[in-house]
Length: 142
Image (tube, rainbow, N blue to C red; front, side, top):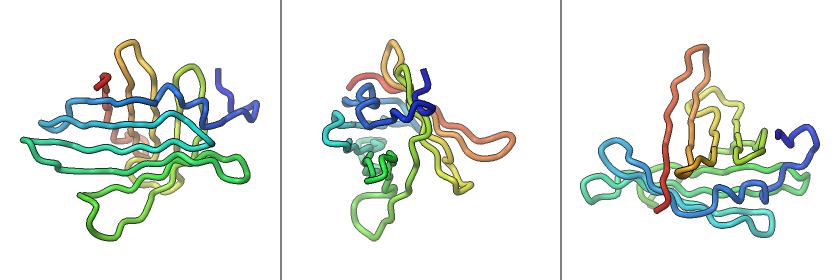
């Protein structure tokens, strides 16, 4: 069920994302962890570990604005050193163990879709264009 039309999109609908997840990626393991929704927010982080070293990190938050819109903010990059700016993705649909976030800028990724599966959680990143680039992360519980 798509709850966008009914105006019921809340962070609480994203409870299926909560937990610690791991997926094989780029010769390593990508870990992603999400807190349970509380007080209109979720906090998360991810890291790619290759050959026993951290190759990439991201810090994530999902927040409810005063107007009720739900936004995922992602701070991408290497380790925490250096100035970084968050990238905002608006929650555009939720329902039955899925959530889709989108940003207007035509960069990769433009869309992020989380889907609860029987074996874990999938995260599909999709780029803009007629033949968009995609990346699929098939997470299992950590």
